[in-house]
Amino acid sequence: MNKQSYADVRKKVERLSSLPTIPPVATKILKLIGSENISLNKVTEFISRDQALSARVLKIINSPVYGFPGRISSISQAVMLIGIGALKGMLLGISMFDMMHKTMMGLWEHSIGTAVAAKAIATKVGMKEIEDVSVAGLIHDIGKVALGICYPELYKNVIIAVGEKKIYIVEAEENIIGANHAEAGSWLARKWRFPLSLVNSIEYHHNPSARHSSMTIAIVHLSDTIIKMMGFGFSGDPFAHRIERIAWDTLALTGEDLKGIFIEIEEAILSQETSIF
Amino acid sequence: MKLIDIKNAKSGMRLARAVENASGMILYGEGIKLTIPIIEKFNSLNIDSIYVEGKSEPRLSRERYLDAADIAFSKVSDNPLMNEIKKGFTEYINSLYE
Ligand SMILES: [Fe+2]
Ligand SMILES: [Fe+2]
Image 1 (cartoon, rainbow over the protein chains, first blue to last red):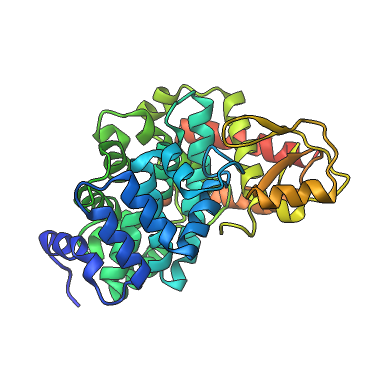
Image 2: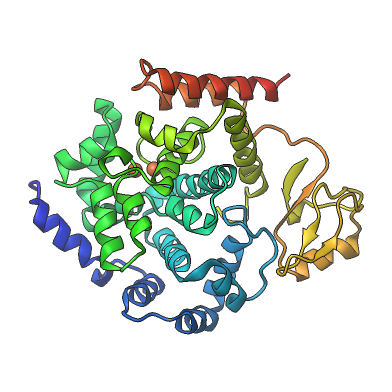
């Protein structure tokens, strides 16, 4: 198969939810996320009607990925606490897990790990909307799933090229498919009317300085690298990108802060071996 | 202090952090010794993880941690900031094995 044009890739990615290979629950979730005038009531109702989905939402929300370990027992409570933006992101995270090919299982761990790291850093720098940052970490690589679903054969070649040529996955995606996962993820996030901070943290998680570095982008950027360094999960991309100075300065972390962050992340991962992974 | 999955909670363990309900009210205070009924109560409240006293075993061996960091940083090993972060991480890993 030949390399696609950039516009073709975009068109295909944006129509992803209508692909026959997407599991029914995921299709339903994606349809809900993308609908206009989505209300808290509507989402609560949607999740509550599906027992398995309810259980998964409660599981994630009570996990160290979010700021409320072990305190949320009902969907309505969950929805009120984390808000519509973060909830949409979490639902996308869940459907992403359903959509993921078995060979991409390490990506789910990488995503959860990045969310956990993002929460630890956000807490350390004193951010208020911690759930939004966690969710940004959770779905930062959503574009890999999108490209993997739209171009399953080519994406296998991407993974092979990364291993053989020791290049960044972004480079391999551009060479082989014609667009990278940060772009693909941002197309989806825009199409599904995600909050701008979420769109930006997906699009610029490898190069925050391309955008005036916001706190959320800087946190996702650093979390992605830290979780790779800590040897948790596998994102298809073994190599960490250089942390940009501007993002690092935005966070202004001391060596002690960093150590505290490592401890938080390890504890969160250790406590969760079975429940959400 | 370590954070554990509720499945691994055993009577006799001590809470290292208070367990609160959704409105922030303390249900069980720091230092409380766990009993079977308390653990069952946590289950019925959907509480998945708790902080208990004690130190957790590291997730990986020291070599595997350091290898992972080497591979992850292999393309940026000439960058001072990355080296600083890696140095901090190496120190943290070493402290786990003291
Ligand atoms: Fe990425
Ligand atoms: Fe990533």
